[in-house]
Length: 150
Image (cartoon, rainbow, N blue to C red; front, side, top):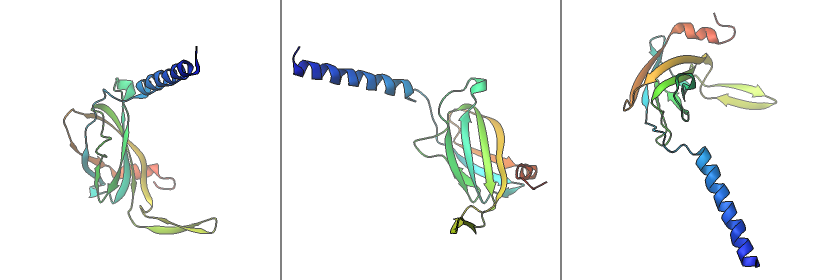
């Protein structure tokens, strides 16, 4: 076997391994859909927050999760990373939207989202295929998820 044949064999082997690995971890075949909506907390638009959508594996839904920021009571998933329809675990964390500064090791940090008003509030939800808008109400009792609040 000459050097050219050996190089082609090794190169072909690398391509085969690459195709195998990317195929195993690919999310192709999973239908994702854009989703936007409103989030209220205790009846008022949530000033700032984070929302995560994860397929509910316990109920047989599979695929990647996604994340969106909540600004002035509204969110929208990134165009290329929508939600997987079906049973979904939604986790929402909310902030008061009033920026504040604090010191960390002599450095001034500005927290633009404000102080937390609730953390990791879970909602089990069924997201139908083709639905692109949902509204979520977080009850005032969710503030008990923050240490020191009752």
